Amino acid sequence: MKKIIFILFIISSFGLNAQIKNYDWKNMSREKRMKVINNLPPDERKALLTELRNKMVLDMLDVAPKDKAEFTEVYNEYLENQKKIIKQFDSGFDPEKLSEEEAKEKLQQSFDTGQKLVDNRRKYAEKMQTVIPCQKVLKLFLSESMMRDKMNERKPHNGNSKGSKPRQNP
Picture (tube, rainbow, N blue to C red):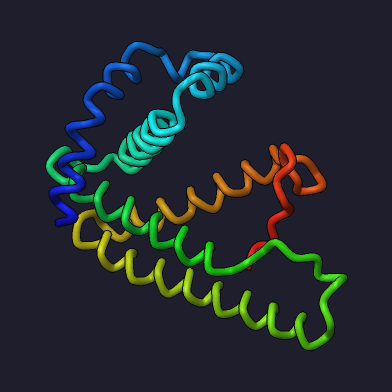
């Protein structure tokens, strides 16, 4: 079933590949990239950003052509599971308004969520190693943390971007 969905995704993204090829993303200014991306319908924007992310990761890791489809499938599955785990932790609360008992419970939930994230990462590191060498898996995880750090640098200092609620990391 997963393979069928993946194949359908690849087939449906052929139109997006044409869009990607129409732009020189590397030499385009950040403002121009943002304008192009923001003018896309939400479904196309998500698919395009996923495609660009996957292409960037495949290039960075120099994944062999014969392994690209399998690695991309495992990598996207890993990211989806990470998102599901993160969504389990409700970060929309003000710690100052919690009772001591509620705060202890939230703290424990954050530890549990963090452990689930680590466990998921370990599970998918093993799966990825069946496709790419361990050195490349390590490079992927190191680059993830560097990208996360860069994204955090770009966020406003109050941690609140465009009216969204502040997010506490588990």
